[in-house]
Length: 500
Length: 66
Image (cartoon, rainbow over all chains, first blue to last red):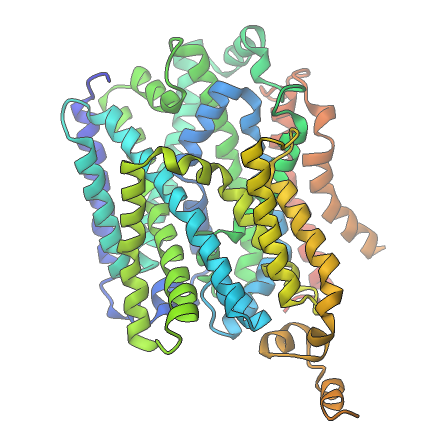
């Protein structure tokens, strides 16, 4: 590895420390950690703009920037699948998130698994959803970890012990998350989002000028020298069918992630969420430009550059100390802040839906709050352990993350609209969906279609086919959530109960 | 009539960003400095919020929101 740049490294470390400090200051007020609801979803008091920053901070991570540029570098326009994916994710969210938020608000729920438990009266389903959520989220946190590790490696080779700095910075993040809860990442998210926009736009304007004399000459050069980058491949294992199904399934999966749901539940009204669904697609303008940075890397960097380092190497060869420092700190923050929100999401699932629903149902109040907060250290610790010790073991789980998460879609979203959806069919559908996804993935029989798509189809088919077998009970039983969603049918049910 | 517009606004973003992809998967013409596929995706980043906004207004006018 090439020697780092001392100016760049100092700037990066200064900015990280400042942000960590702000993370702690955000939690000065003791109320931020007084209950699970305060700590994890900020007492549901965040307005539209704050939710925008939070969800934006949440979803546009270091991995987004490093992963997309490296995909663009190696696979060209396949990287653009991220655009329809996230645009459609917000569009789809418009139709179900306000409703989900209302149920969660009314029944004081803080996780998606909580919702499933109340909707279906099933602790089995809620703990299954929590297990899937935590299992898929830990590798995702690891990805963030490797993002900051790569960044520090480029910035600091020859000056620092990268592993020690990575462990220290994650410990600090865990500590401020424990302390400030969701308030920590929210305020720091504003800094991160502003930096992301400023730095990415700066790079997109300056890099084409530095290397090609402008944007249009750059596009001309890609068209003549590497036209294969600019269109989706029409043959090969990943072509247009993959692109379409991957975009669609990922769009359905986006808000099934625990960290995305946490962000959404902080909103103060259903209307704040509708407005977010409206404005969030605009965030993707940055994303489309980031993919072009990958194309620049392809033209500028010498052959044999590790694609994983495409963006970082491009920054290193193009800018002086200050430019590098600002760019590295942006990527570092894009790794640390989402990590904090993910840790809150995973801890919440673990404490509420695995520990409480499965192991110790009597736990509540102050003790539950403490366990939820303490889980932050366990979650980040596990991610560090796996990331540093068994980086290879996690690769499959990372690849399957989206395909796995989308399998809870019928349990969470379809159930908002379908009164007679039964617990039994939903659980079986979830299990079949997961099994099919893993089988398709491990046997390599996806036929050029995204793995999660097969799983989701099997999942839906199972729910629809098996539902009639169990529907009798569901039709005549009700609970608070069903009443809230579909209105009371009490008369009818009372009559049946009396055996009339 | 309103119902038809509503359905149209819901279907359009999916059609434009998924179904028609095989037909816009090309480099020429270059629009606004972007090769056509990229221009098309960019266009729908901007147009999708308008669809959402249209749906929002329609639902509001029908009193479907609270």
